[in-house]
Length: 184
Image (cartoon, rainbow, N blue to C red; front, side, top):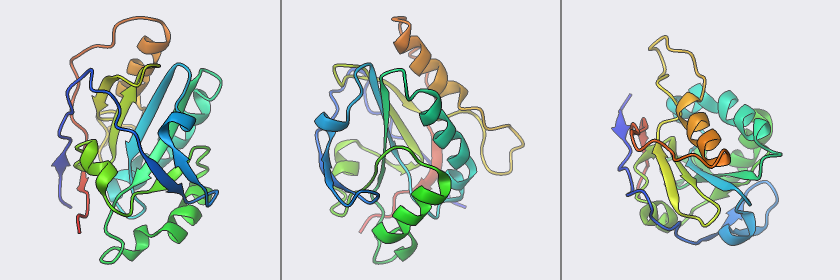
């Protein structure tokens, strides 16, 4: 299992805008329309990655925990579906339903959005404030498949809570580790 770290986009970066197909609704969705009033979590995930499978329940629960806080979650899959058909839009929709996702699961067919965010792995997490400026990027928590550390979402939850409480988000942030994005 390959272990690729996040590229760690510079804090303060403005979220690159995008319009992508939401595999759940079948509609094209724009970042400006989906962003949260108090913050936006953008995560690059996919269906087949063991690192994503390991945390699926937590990201689903986390989105539900923050649903009334004004923080929105958005998932994007940018993998090459020609060589990784299990990450195609139809199976993304099935996966989102079976995992209980309450957030859009977008398909980045051109991979341009992943490149704009300098995403490197799945999962890769970004938290933007209400002005869509990056305040956190990196790991969900210290748990990885097989390391025995419980999945808690602590790192991302702490960043979200700091943002919601008008506290500065710690700049001590660890890169996520996961499967590399499957580039064309």
